[in-house]
Amino acid sequence: MFTVFSLDGAIGANFRNKKAFNNTLENFKFDFLPNDGGTIDIGPYYLGANEVYASDEALKNDINYLLELRKKNKCQIAVGSCGWSGAKAHVERFVKILSELLIERKEEELKIAVIDATVNPEEALRREIKEELNLQIYDIKYLLSIPNIYEFEGIVYHTLDLVFACKVKDFETIQTDDDVSGFKFIPIDKVSIDDIGLRSAKEIVKILKTTID
Image (cartoon, rainbow, N blue to C red; front, side, top):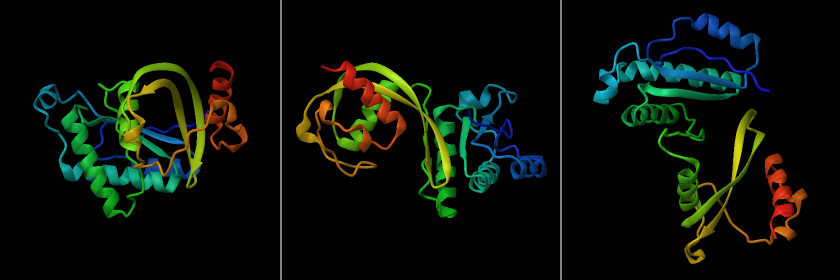
């Protein structure tokens, strides 16, 4: 179980009760700060026109405040309906402002995860494998999912790990990039559970050991 605190319903509309927010965060510990990034109260025009109701300055001020709260409380932030309407153009604008802020704040090490409503897990898997190992995969089959909790730089992260089986088109193209520093092929029966760090990965390998011939 983890605790959440949602601050506001429209990032860029100016957080009106910062004193109450600050008092709450000083007296309680939260794992997660979810926020709705927009509203439909302004009508459908901005969604259809790919325009954002709030100004860049207003968005920047509110995003910067969220980053301050994240830093003080050492937790994660999630924003839905980015840019008020959540269309591709709105999300890209939001991410651009956030990226610029992270550079200004010298917090470039923080990762931005963008969840596109039109992308399914299989497409995300293809993209990540291509980016990190330069491999093309196919015949993807979902196997199982396992919740996971891990800590990094004092922040507790709650994730859901999805496990897939797939085939690789050609291993000759393999090369590491992004978060991957190296690779090694080990038969499943030779993998030592004790050598695995993440709890969910341990459980996944245990299951695979009993199901894969």
